[in-house]
Length: 295
Image (cartoon, rainbow, N blue to C red; front, side):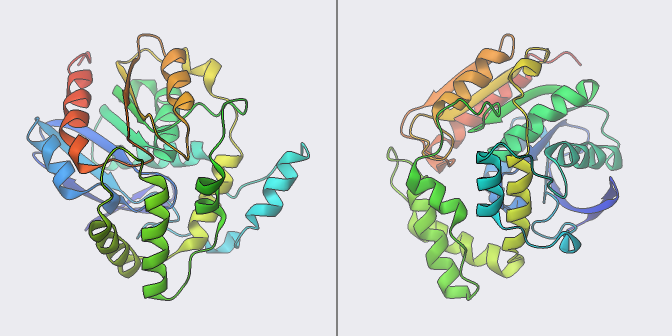
């Protein structure tokens, strides 16, 4: 896969479809490599006339790692926040949004449809806020506004984030499968074999848990974007699972309420995941939202 030099880092990326088609940039969430955007899912967008770009965020996968920043103590930083202190992450979500825009620059894409999941939803919101001239349409999936007063993750989902991953391959795979069973949601059968295979592929491609911790610090350091989201004026779709244990559905509802004219799609039974049975529904909704864009 190719690498792009952008925003003073190297970004691993790949593409699907015809470069002359409608550009769609997919931004993945916390600790997740770009391969978490399933190839079949990406090809469904190609069938809808999109040129799909997916990439590894900084500090994950095969993009630049921030080793020199060291491995943070997440619990210590969390407790500091609880005491009203500020934290200083080695980079911010704004930096990660600038990475994504830098990738568009390298690909000579002036404007794109942008779609992000979880942390990726936060990043695409920031792209729309900080680089509005680069955005044709916006889709925020299972994400939130950063409002600290919104309902927080269920305890079992929070444990998924803070419990260290085993370093040994088979133990990691079991850990991954168990965690995603918690996050997946109750409305669809959990495809354990698929998640076991995903875990193995992700581990073999790049096992790098310290990068996820630094990404988590970036999330912990954000401000409430709610008031600023009111300035977004591109077609916006907000998708959220009604059974999301990690980012409760109220986060999606508030995101849609803050962005003028945003459409809210709540999928009952969907957790913090994109089950294959809903892919067609999600792709159709994103394509419909993109059709509203002014080119």
